[in-house]
Image (cartoon, rainbow, N blue to C red; front, side, top):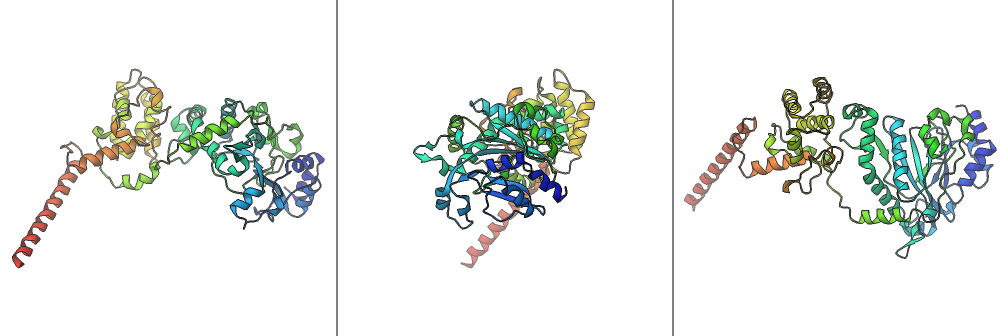
Length: 456
């Protein structure tokens, strides 16, 4: 887009009035064409300030989620206490980005809106300008105080709690819809370089906020697509396509953004804070990946978790999903492609309504040719375990996040106490070898002790 076209766009009275009105009480920063931000802090006080900033090099405008008594007093050297005194409030922006398809982000935005409505909230939405959407709840929707503490002083902890709460509560809904959109798990996995089977491998819902956090202003252009960040009604969101956000179409989008009734989001905030207080950060499965990689042998079925054993016994529902679960799980168990294929075909024969061999082979073929190992869904997945009736936890399951952790824990425990029976698998020679080493070490220690006693 040429500079004169950018200036022409921001010189429109409609755009100027919308941006200047939204700027009240906020830090506003222009973004330059080379992707740098202009000098901070800065503000927009009047409509005519908008084209003036463009003449100085701004091509897009970003503003703070926080509201300030005087934004120009902000400084990078301010203490947290000083910033808290200057902050008059904050808005809650849920930033949703698609990692592969805008359709995924649109679905996620609609899911978030539906979830918020369950709390009696009427959220507002806008297109981000590129590959996602912003769902907004204004600061007026929250109570002014909680437990005698000013809500303005609960930033960024409160929005972080709400983001985490929302992400957890809609996770299964998102996964179901993603699988439905793509027509299956294998097709979904092809859309992104996913490491785990989580909706947040395909959709990013921001969960981290810091002081002076910025987001793209309504009606600002996006410096990479030159599309406008237009507010959307719920009806417009359902049928929205990026081409509709071209600069010449902006007057078609005149919905309010960040307009809510007083304290209508109080219940959401209270439940999110209660949820946050109960959270214990679990160790990520990925952190154990190095430990898991130390075992090179095939892990036999006797060490598998109840959910996988129940799947292997034959199931009526969730067969296609379980092909993914089995192929991902068995690959982590160091099974060969031939062994995996044979076992999955045996399992399919036990099912009341077997899947076609062509479907199984196509899914296995895709999965087994991946250079990376992909985690099966975590244990708390309703879609992959609970809804199909295979989640029957035992004592070993306690505290584990993923089925592969169960197998590695059970395998190590048995090996450590020397109770691994002679199995028709590659682990037997390894056990024998390790026992010989231990016997040699013990014999050497005994000889050394004898020598010491003779010397004394």
